[in-house]
Amino acid sequence: MRTLSTLLLITITLLSSGQDWALINPAYRYNYSDDGTDTISNQIRVMEVDTLGVDSVLYTLNRIAFLCDSCPASLGGLCDGCFMWVDQPQFLRGSALHTPGLWTLMDPDTLLLLVPPVLGQNWAADPTGTVTAAVVALEEDSYLGELDSIATIATSGGDTLVLSRSYGLVRMVRSDGTIYAGIGVEGPELGELFPDPIEFFQYNSGDVLQYHRYGMLMYGSDWREFNYYIKTIYGERVDSDTGYTISFTRGYYQQWFLYPEGVTGVTEFGTQFFPMQPEYPMDVILESYPKELLQILDENGNIQYSFAANRNMNDQGLHQISSIEDSIEDYRSYNTISEYPTNMYNNLYPLIEQGIFNEYIEGIGLYKWGFESYFEPRDILILSGSCVNGDTIGSLIPDAYFFGTLGMNNTVAAIPYHLISTLCDKELLIKSDSDARSEWTIIDLHGRHLKHGTLRHSLSSVDVGSLATGTYVFMASSAQGQWSQRFVVAR
Image (cartoon, rainbow, N blue to C red; front, side, top):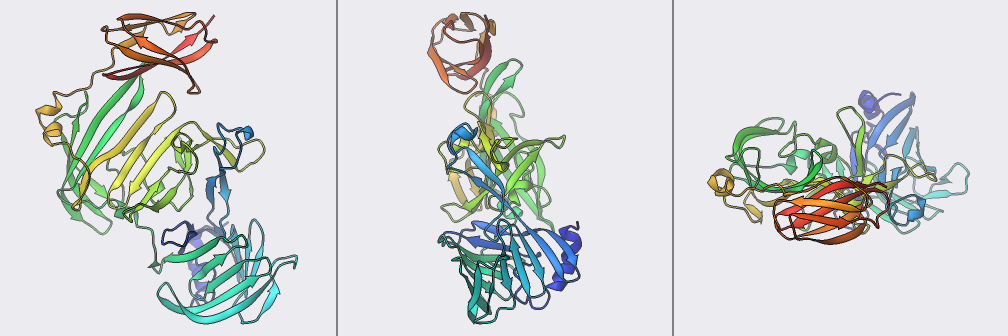
């Protein structure tokens, strides 16, 4: 099987006759909207090309993943709607076979399109002959600012396709009323386009980014909270053919490690993107298409987590990319796809009880990163303030807190609690460094709250005799912050 890169020259040669009603050009990416706006909801691109003969070429098209918000929890998920269909063909179907005078669209069904279109021409549009198609209009018209020949094809199945001689599918109206309208073509750079990855990171001298990082991770056998701010001030920028480099000064405020007096350095945008999280492969999501299934691998090449890319426009008209969906309640805790599908459907995967956040905004860059679940570990990095290209978001903490003595005088101490023993029968003993009042909660490993109360003394006991044997999490919170630790009830 030949790859797209090795066959690109061959297929462009086959399609070189002024495009001549080519439905697909592997050098192009076709952008569509399904809601009548200029927001790109779908992108059709060629993922693989096979030459089956001298004049026969098979194009494998990109596939998507999307929520099944009607799937019940009884299928094996954590909640109703907590499922994702993966490896699904888009509206143009999963593959397209080009032979002389014919395009055959396949998966899940088959649609035959004769080219070049002739006004009034009729033909059988599927292999069984039960669906027919006819060219009902053929005219010169403007598409994406270009004058072109436009053909309208209607099928007896209720679908209507509008084709351009030069730029493929202009519009598809499905029998269920869904409309996919072409609004841009990447390659010839017409209409609405996705920004290049570097356009998400456009910083100049004097621009400022301020992030808030907080969460709770394991240190030894304890879960401890962290909470601090990071400010980056950009300096001299040097542009190149591949992007640019820019110097920066970075400071940290309200924390007990790293570099309280600030660090300096130079970072590069263009061939790599790491303004804050160098370990995260940002190009995976920055170069994604809408609803693409993204798989993040660990250092051994194993899948670490998977999610569907969500691309849209924000209220300011800027492109944004994220792993976050809003289609089901509390999706932030259920946007990571399970490693295994349901028993009934090979392509239906449950969502697991963990939220993975990756969100980028055009011109600003990283907006939010991290992970969290209903209990225990979480690590969130979110933009709390910025001044980029003269536009201000949020509020900025004075520089003195990041680069002067104020940062040293405002540190966060570890929460002074610990369990005397993490193995118990009927009573759990908690020791603290003071008699400060704290609220406590016990949850199970599914995040269900089972007991709660108040700690009032340096040595306190909690009755766990009503709990079944198993593993639980003890959580305490006070004005100093939060703390948690696992324990086991054994009898």
